[in-house]
Image (tube, rainbow, N blue to C red; front, side, top):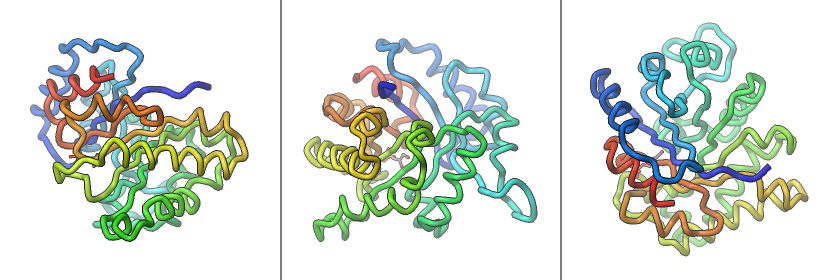
Length: 248
Ligand code: 13P
């Protein structure tokens, strides 16, 4: 399986219903020049149902790995599927840092998604202190090893990886092209080493996230191991989001 080009918008905890509908309508009206790029967005969960009619794929930013039960405030995969989510984010650094989600808890989420045939965008990325210490790839490889690499090669095809260096998220400070390509290549090498398969490594899409915008998307997407972007702030503006998609 050849890997896909993907541009995904993570709306985080932004927009109310009217704004969300207006944004999706505005995105749909703009012209996507490269139809090979798959567009998707992750709105706040309570708007998934009213936005699922769009041609874009709609996903959920978060879920609980249990089937059901006493988890006040949480949503299960079945519930998200029921309202129209067709992909989930797992391991965003905001979930890791602000809500204390560990690699082992994220592994439970990965297993729950796989059990429900729910495609995954799995986020990884290092804090600045780890990068400054020269340990970024080792740190990211450990995140993948502890949460993802127990999957079989057949299960791993349901996973897209998003590399989001924490120091680049919402800061306006993007990884350089060299930093992004080196990490993406390192992630692909780690997949190859673990699965002993260059075919498996070559089939996984690896997205970049962190202050990606219409001005820097083209050079990032030109990197051989960067297969698209997971976009935060710039995904809240239809023109910017489509400009990023058109940067391929
Ligand atoms: P920004 O694009 O706002 O830096 O956010 C990136 C991100 O966290 C996407 O998940």
